[in-house]
Image 1 (cartoon, helix red, strand yellow):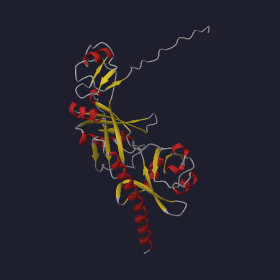
Image 2 (image 1 turned 60 degrees about the horizontal axis):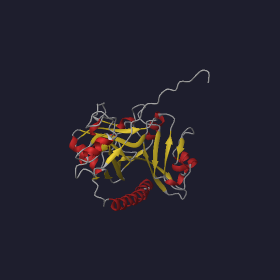
Image 3 (image 1 turned 30 degrees about the horizontal axis):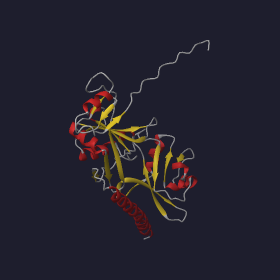
Image 4 (image 1 turned 180 degrees about the vertical axis):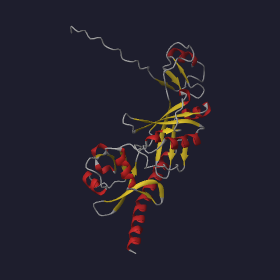
Length: 306
């Protein structure tokens, strides 16, 4: 009977906080979805973590839903972490409600996840129970990053840059396969998705999405934004063409420093050719993206007598 009471307390006290978070997300979403941008709503496929695989996880792990009255020492004791682990709080403030914990090795992350549990009402979340200063039990969400989550499909492909968009403001927990589902259901067939990571291999909130057909690419570029709404989050993704060095599509000689993002063009031009082409009535209002070519720095010759 005692065990049943404890489980009852855990279930409803944690569910109450979760429902409040979902309600905030719904209110947040309601205030944003009046802009006319395309919207994707749905439930994302859950990540399939194989904790038996070695060196699969990044040593940086996200912790969400932390009590605002917590500190590093309290978290270390309740989560039973080794002294070698370090915490990274946003702006150095533990009261923000989330943090990153850095382990020494990928194996330590695997062991930490093995001692965690999945929510009985939400199988795609890993969590730990901790208590705040008042003694109330809080549910802390654990979000690891598996290295293979950055690619869809898993095998490498040569992606055509002229059908690729750069996606910004990507939620740190979104995997490449999940982004592929979102973009394919919104714009059209997806060829490849890559989540861009930093030098340390952790996501940078950027991704490249390559489409199979130009029509899908055009729909994505001209939309500019995509609102993503799931039961756990709301995110507005920014969509821009993925620019690479190219020649002017008219004179084929000068560098294409102007990209016309209007759906009737989507081409690179030099400045003079863009002005000439867009003198036609109705084309002068086309939106453009200006960019410059980065030339490699020249080696400086050092005189031995200097």
